[in-house]
Image (tube, rainbow, N blue to C red; front, side, top):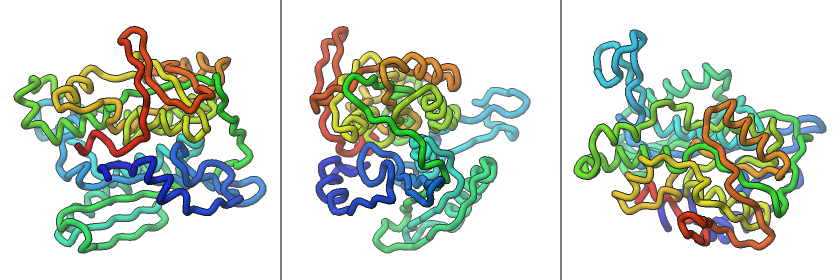
Length: 361
């Protein structure tokens, strides 16, 4: 099996198929295309549960994925003086971001989280301490409480590797309306395809890429603002403007997210290639590495289902409240086929079941 999210075929055949349905789960749950599960707790209260994962193979310690933040004097961020602030990313922070994104995609606000760390036998205590210190600062600033978790050392892991899983919880009104996606509904893509994955690839292949792209160009591929990795504001703006469903794009990229939201609705989708937002830097770096940027991890991007009469409202709301690019990219169709088309670029490409992620190739 390929590294990344398990393939759709294996997921359905060997995981989801064996999970019994529960009438207490009133929305979402154990199926691709659903970001969280809504549990019926009592008549007027539901509990949203979302998961997030990352590991040290994705984000090694001391990575250079996030750019240097300018100091308060406004000095050039490229000068690593005493007043400069370097903010890296840890795999625990990424697991937290993804868990929260899954709650946002379901229309909730994370209130509590649980943390699980599995460590190889040679992982240093300082690595764990730094990750947890950063996470407690993040959650405290957002009023999110860490309510528990589990930390284990396992010989099944490579000695210096580790994994992080975060479960996020949100109390919500389980009576909220969830309109069914129907043929003719529009599919909106917001945020940049492969933006996060490109930053990871830059870190992982930077020595190789220096011979192919100018260093100044490679610097533009780094993450300048961690807020681009969260879908909080975009999801909130979409729901307020009348979106039916929001799906977080992460492992497997934009193509996987499109496939999954259509599959979960029992429909197909036809999406215009030129209406998927993507940065030229992402295209350039993936071309140099022989990878598909649309199958590249896209944490921070999202796909949205909306009725035709609300499409402009949702697109404009996302742009106004987040500054993200958002496009009416296509439609849901009765035929189960999922495809990317373009009259401009002469594309008519069938989307296959998601299988891994280009970030790990």
